[in-house]
Length: 229
Image (cartoon, rainbow, N blue to C red; front, top):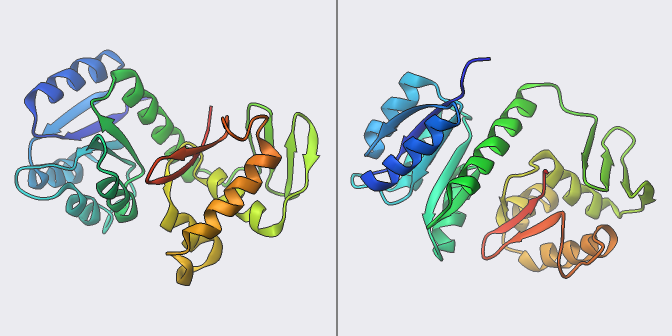
């Protein structure tokens, strides 16, 4: 198998050097750009497997770059975001990014997110899987059954739709707006209380300790993620 190709769009030289050393040591092929314009050119030229992009670029907003990418490619996009800027994270995800990593960050965290993005892209390129499993959680998408530790768990139709939406994007953070639109419809994009209520119900049914979830993870200020490993 050829080495996965990554395009890094980041203007800070120190961060590029840090990521270059870590990505190349893991066998990735890396192409770099310091501006949004150059990044778009690199993506078009290299046809990468993953794009890693900073939001604070010197020539344009990284969110605008993501929107332009989504006009013609579904390549997984991982955002590098300054810690605490939840609005930027949400805007980036709503614009089409697949995930984000907060600055400052560790190489291990970013590498793990890249592996998840590659697996998700591989699943999307293949036929839809008939089942999903992580830990003690098993979801049979054909029979529409959910099991914890081998015992069937009965979900309401909305609970099941919320869970399977997260299953289809396992390992990827989904914003509250994305989940509300997909589960409840386009007119409910602002009804965050629906989502909170049903997430509480799902955790009560699927988590050994709902207060410290293992599977249904909260991304503070942004949305939710289903653990994939």
